[in-house]
Image 1 (spheres, one colour):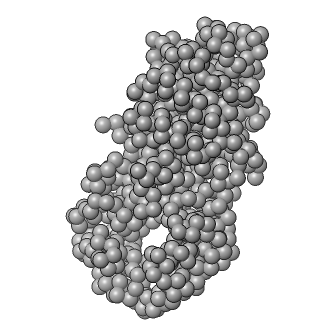
Image 2 (cartoon, one colour):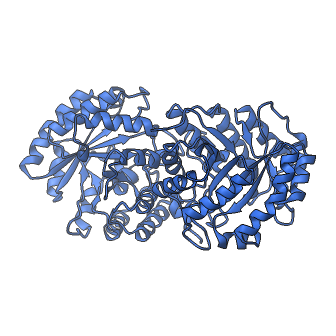
Image 3 (spheres, each protein chain N blue to C red):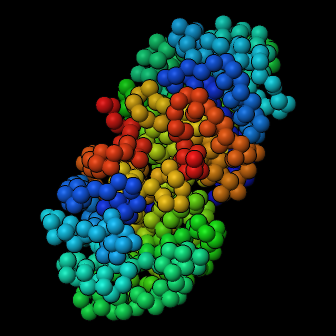
Length: 299
Length: 299
């Protein structure tokens, strides 16, 4: 089986995680979280987003956070940008990588960003053009790849179609998001196989939420196809706006534990990662949403 | 891949789950739990154990519980027995199936039941003989198959050795227990493959604890080998005596959700199962230890 020898983990807690938490944390806490993650060995840390504070108030301090973190050589600190204004802010903040997002579900696209999938892709064309001019790498997120809170099932063909368009538009990597965490292993494998017919598998990342506890099983199944980039959030923070009481992104420490056990290299120190999980969970007033942090908590 | 078309789930919440919970529940609650589980479609429900109440006070009411449950045709209600006295009590309680237990770890065997692995197997010989006379089926548990809280690593060869001896002694099925939940997918696969050289794979069951969040991934990996019997506890109840704050057995509802998504037949109604999880978790004063029950809880 073509299991990868190493996996690059994209740590999304400072953005996807904190964005969806009920409690806000200060820029100080965000800076410390990001620095703990780079110290633990994370090489890609999504640091925030330049979106309207009206829509995502939790991310209003992204410029401040980016100006204050100690940037470690070799570590990327991408930010999410929805449009040219966001990209300009990212350039001003000396970002070397940004991310754009589209959905594989028409219903989700309409409700989430008020336009069709096709319109959303058209809107990103000038963003990608300007990013290219500035030598900024662009990552593409595709949401609802294994189910949509509004339309239910999502056809893998639709996931492949939007993934291919983002890739052809210049995204160097496509992150496939199981936004509501309803996927199971066979569905996940079928979806990735379908997308891989249009986008090289080494350009695909998994972004699975653990809402129904399926994330690690789904990731394991897709690793068997050769996928080697995985998004995760330390402490499993983030929750799910579509399922109250649910967990969020797969917890990075649970993922790293699995990969360590499989001798798949991540470059991340598990013990420091767990400390980071405890740090941010405490600041959020939560128990960590990871098995590992809870199991090792003998306090 | 030889994924099974159907899986038999052995529901262990009334025994392995309740035995390890801090809070005791009344026989009334146990009877209702067992009946909810059979109504939901569970076909094997471990109902209790006949062990000394001095060692396991939570199970002291097993005879009463067995006398009061409405026994559904086609449903097995096995109980754990450590010795002849336990078997005699099981016979008196009209049990048609019992379970014995040994460990793959010498250190665990010594600390848990005060004798070597070999001595523990010798002790079960008369139990198996008397069970055979009475037409009672015997299931064998092997603990610490993927790690031991005292000796650490456990060699798959040792798991195979004790499994083979239990099988040869007359156990119809061997349940492989990752007692402390430290296993990861490759280790789990290697262990099952090794045991399957000595015991037919259709006679093997997985009994994985979710202490480190790995259970579903490990189960998925082993299903790919053709294993088709899995132990689980509704609500993920039980905790782990070796890791404070940890979750217990893999939650049956998270497992059934995965299997439903894979079109693997279980005969279990997920919605009634989740109701049973909420019922017992509430009686224990806990939030259910399953992603599914939490995610679907919009209250």
